[in-house]
Length: 189
Image (tube, rainbow, N blue to C red; front, side, top):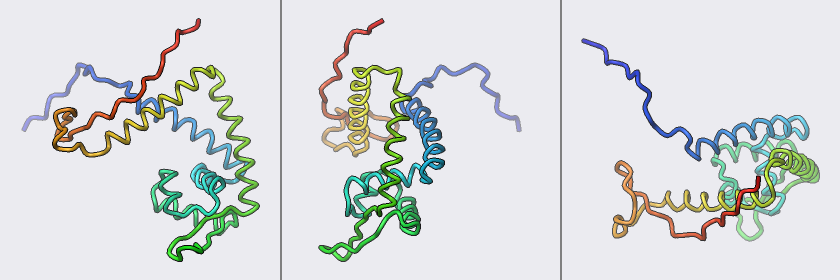
């Protein structure tokens, strides 16, 4: 039996996918931020994300917290259990529905979130220091638009609209509804 011949000519394929570029920047920024937060406030990035949402919505239920933070249920539950053991988060049975658990920060938890918020604002300002406020506003709008498109494209296309979607392999993708385009502004040199 002969072995298959290797491909020695480079394929002309796309490598600069936006999702890849965003992932690289995100992973690098998360690694830096995580190390700083662990050292300065003793919290992981995941723990801090959960606590920030609890801080802005005292009494938040675990199911809503998981939905809003986009964390996997098991990871979020383990983190909440650890934060509760450390005295940073309180769990309380809901007064309106005994099946629900409401989450609250303790004074120590709130102090750490406030300290982390100050650190986070400084790190974000440093990271974005080479980006103008106008470009930052456009960037945020683009991210919102991309998020909308990703959420929409994840929905299965309806059979009667299949002709308006794009067939990718065996998966039918539905085009998202039109959104107002981001206004381009002249580049300043």
